Image (tube, rainbow, N blue to C red; front, side, top):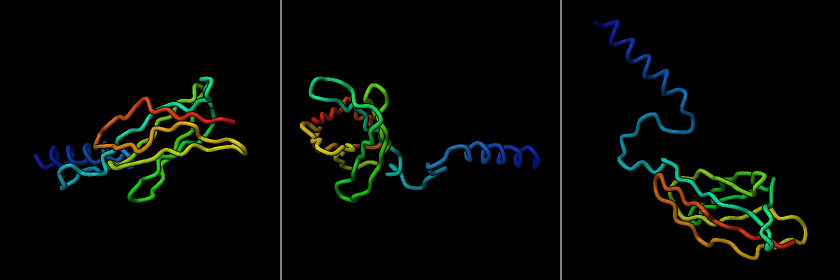
Length: 121
C-alpha cells in the first residue's frame, strides 16, 4: 500500500512540474496570480492590421509591464494577473495612437477580448 501511495504522489508532482508560471497549489482562496487575458488588434485608421509590433499591458497600480507581439492579422493576446491596465503599442518614428481602449479592468480568469488600438503613421 505504501508503494501505491508513494507512486500516486510522484505522479501528481511530476504532472504539476509541467505547468510553469502557475502556483501548483495555493492556500489562498481566489489567488490573484490566476491570469486573465487581454486580447485585441492593432491596426491603422484604414483598418489595415499592423503585424510584428509589441503591445504592452501596463498595470495602473503597479507599473508592471506584460507584452506580446502582434501576429500577421494585427492580433495580440497578453496574459496578466487581475488588475487595471492600459495598453501601449510600440510606435515607430512619427506614429501616434489615435484610438485606444482606455483603462481595462481584468478579473481572475477573465478574457477581455476585442480591444482595438489604432495607430496613424
